[in-house]
Image (cartoon, rainbow, N blue to C red; front, side, top):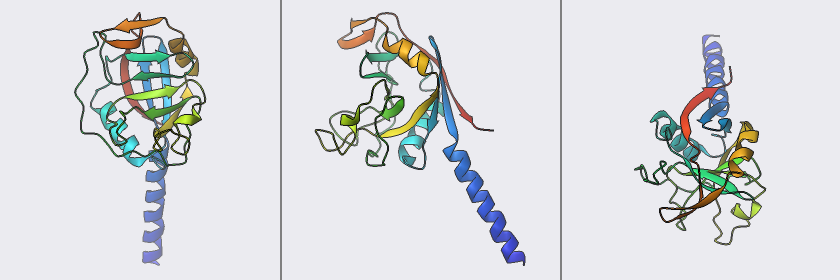
Amino acid sequence: MFKTVRLVLMLLLVATACQAALAQKVKLATSMGDVVIQLDADKAPRTVANFVQYVKDGHYDGLIFHRVIAGFMIQAGGYDATMKEKATRPSIPLESRNGLSNARGTIAMARTSVPDSASSQFFINVADNVRLDAANAADGNGYAVFGKVVSGMDVVDKIRAVPVGDKAGHQNVPQQPVVIRKATLESDK
């Protein structure tokens, strides 16, 4: 009897922990409004853990959306308003074959042409970009989706519509900085 009760309690604890991980959200309080992202630790565990650690470290606070392409995506996580790049931790393995698609409203990790090069930069898809999925990508690797916007897509759409230009050797930079004032962890209660 005691073993059965203990097993049931352990299973409930595991289920609660898994549900909490799956319910984890991040709020990006930007200069244009709040965006809340539901993370999918079940499908992209390493990517979510990496992103969450950057949030916990305060890495995103004060950074800007440095690349905005109206019919494609908005990108952040690397630069401040002067286009100074912020130091990052080592890159993580690519989790692009996780069954999640680069659909409108999803968040994915930015990377270089090297598949396992993602660190802190991310982008929010403002259109269905299935060509970025591993199965459709020109390089055969794609970009790892690890969550989706669950609140604030209107803010994302406001950001994608800002005027952009060239700045400090970068293209598609908002003419007026769109700042992530604070990134915080949240969870369903």
